[in-house]
Image (cartoon, rainbow, N blue to C red; front, side, top):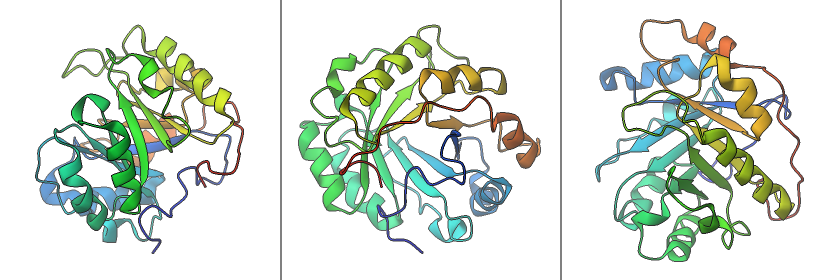
Length: 237
């Protein structure tokens, strides 16, 4: 099993296709390991964990051993720093946080990396994109949350424009920085999201519940390929 932070964030047989991150928000937590294992066996590339309070779950790295996927943690709590050690110990590969939820963004980024994880910045629909301009040289991922209203599962009208703008900023660096879209992902909009620059698509209701996991993945998978990103030393490896 790879050590947290050492797993390739862009690992996929076809590097030109988007990765799919299956979110655990819709799963029955009593069956978490079973559901994660089913998703990985069906072809999910990442497992996406939203931390909504200050008691992170044991995040199921053993359940992911066979699948080899990335354990991706999205912090939605304040203060973010207090949870980094616990998340790293639980097996996180990537820890993303919102700049609004920490006192010093650079300090939190260093903390995540010092604990052996890759680091990402998550952007709400109201967060100015300029927030990431001075951070891109150190980031491994940018998460664009594309759902406008809490509880909504639709794609916000301005999401594609924001994704394109973030993608352009990333491309200008020449680094391999993963662009993740969290929320609003549906089979009918995957092509538009990928063309806008998305590398990783977080899908929640498509994977867990009464539907067949493999069929849901097939519906989301292999739409028009994303643009290849430049790779330079120091980027995501």
